[in-house]
Figure 1 (spheres, rainbow, N blue to C red):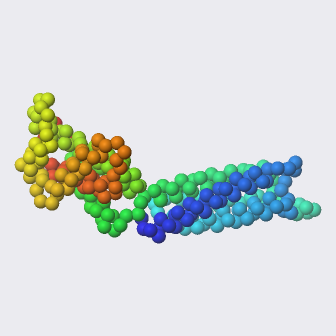
Figure 2: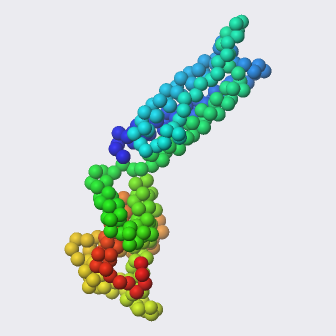
Figure 3: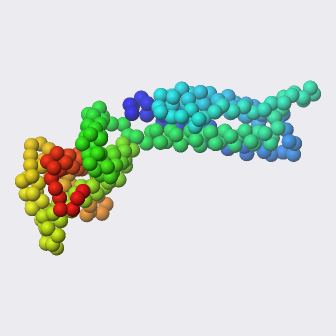
Length: 270
């Protein structure tokens, strides 16, 4: 999502929050008194008319901006009008019962709009370089990993989705869990089912022998292993940066890709 789009959505969020406060105020202000009508000569009548105009204007602005996203028209906010009656003697007036019902419909529209906007703006703004890197990883997951390891690809996609929402710890832990599972399977392959403890050095040696750690991709795997095993999975109060999240996702994707490409058989199937 571009910076301009995020700014527009944030502005709409602020405007809807303001409208919500006015709806609550008008509801409280127009419910008093003995009469069941609100005459055009009373202040609450004017406040409700101004609210209606501002509400419907915001509906139009919101629809125009949100239509650029893949959002169903059925859930978009709808314009609302207060039913106005006319008396030949006292002029225009509103019925309090109908005003209450209209304010409730406005309230529902506001809450739905705020929910939509909140979800849309939950995706963080990424640099073009980071965006390309994530798209490249998603493509790798789809073309190389998904067919052979659908559950693993599903978790990795969830990790990327969490990253986009700014949930960096969740993103790192999801990808790290996949990485950890693969490494445990390598350990069990090397131990041949025995209870022998396998060191990280032996795992690296196994991956090197199999040609997994060759070229630049090997450093990505090692960096992800070190970051996740030595820091994030053991230290309470440690939170990953966006860069560290990408390192773990990248290393995990590359490890699975190499295992598939090299047709490496593990004692315990992935």
